[in-house]
Image (tube, rainbow, N blue to C red; front, side, top):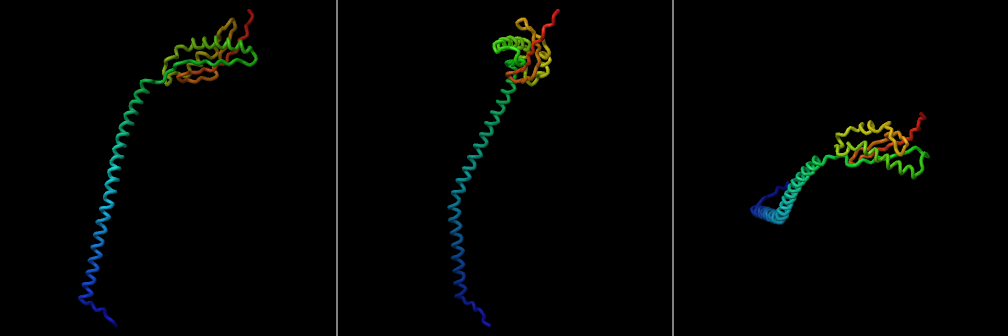
Length: 172
């Protein structure tokens, strides 16, 4: 068997190589820290700037949201206009007669629903419009019409869709 003999010369070469290796490792890591440290500082500053921008924008958004909520509370939606849409049974009147009757019936319906203007939409009783207009008989140009509510849209521009049927005159 062969044994490895260690001499002083072998040991000194080994320690010299180990010293160069350690010195190279230390120098290399120092250069890496110097090279990457600048980039890390740059990214840290950019991150802090972005966090500051987020905080500023969040404060602005919360301020705008509170202002918008205040405006909505002040501006509660109300009924501003009434738009009656009058429908007639087919082939009962000429186009000209329908237009003339429509204008007069619209004026009458607007007069009946005038008290709804200015009321808040959320608190308005939606059964009120059909209760006022359903089965109401109105006289327009000497002719009687019976109104029937087909549909109602309650919004700032409230629309009421009505069926206006002529009522036959009973002989006395």
